[in-house]
Image 1 (tube, rainbow, N blue to C red):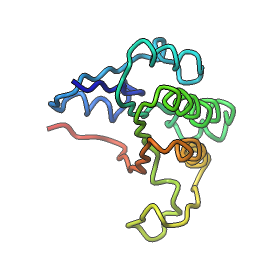
Image 2: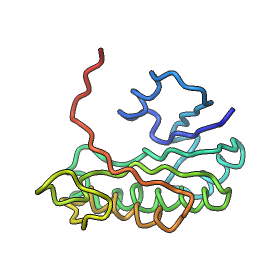
Image 3: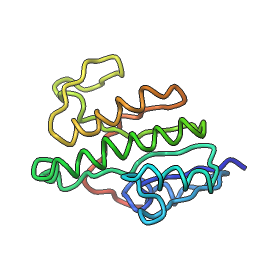
Image 4: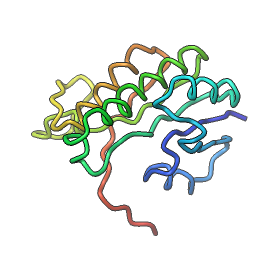
Length: 155
């Protein structure tokens, strides 16, 4: 059975993903078990748990003002934290799936493709694009530029 580690396991996407039936063994480690801001924490966790895939959703996101007021935290989590994930996945040859944001696009036309030019609309988008730069260096990876709504309705 394939094993997946899902960072950001208490976030909005993971909350929904947990409800989906699947054939994989999925782990949702807490920040105390896998602190993306600390490379040794990430590497130790991956060595111990040996996942086949890592879905990287952990990020500093809301409130958006935090990326203006505390750029150090934004850089540490979204850029350096993602770089730590990439470095560890690269060392252990783990397939990496990175959840970025559609905010890297200017938002003027819609229906963007990965070949369209980027123009991040705020510091959050800049920090996620910085994470993308690290992920792009690792060929065993996939970047998803997703759009999240403010509220999710469960049915």
